[in-house]
Length: 227
Image 1 (cartoon, rainbow, N blue to C red):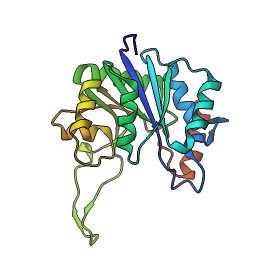
Image 2: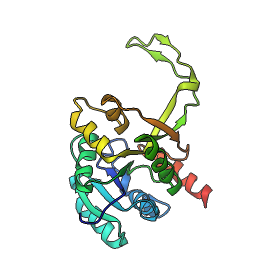
Image 3: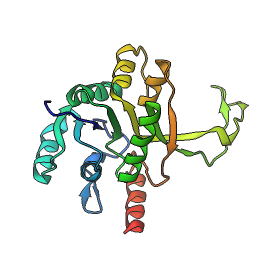
């Protein structure tokens, strides 16, 4: 990578789609277009994103590369294979992206991301080094043990449901993963383990993740509502 890249994106779509009843969620059609195509298209349209890496399962590499070539997305620099765990896939994407100032990590199964959500994350991370989209929890949450006996009820006003985009200084997230000794379910947790602070910024309740067939139906409804 010769040119200077200010902000890059790693789109992680290497999951197994185990709860989709045999349908590969990132290639499922949403409003006539593959879920993943909607995600990449939004990042392509975002003025602040200079370079995009797409991370797929090995079984989907050829399909993904054909889609990228057909769409002609100029910012997609590579479509690479992910690893066994989500964090392995993110690290693979970060390595392909190469050094930049800020990196946006986003789930390939969140097709209703907007350029505003990406821009807001970049702005917040420019100030703090780490910022993740999140929305307030609307349900009351109970903490229970293995015996299903309630142990406590945390105050709802302090609880947030975390989404992607998650945005970091490139050096901060790469070092956090280099030091990481645990399995994590999101990138912010790796940064927290490294002792760095993470700021929440306002996400969107429409920014849902496709994990089950019902989620795809809901995404279709939300997409039509925006039209």
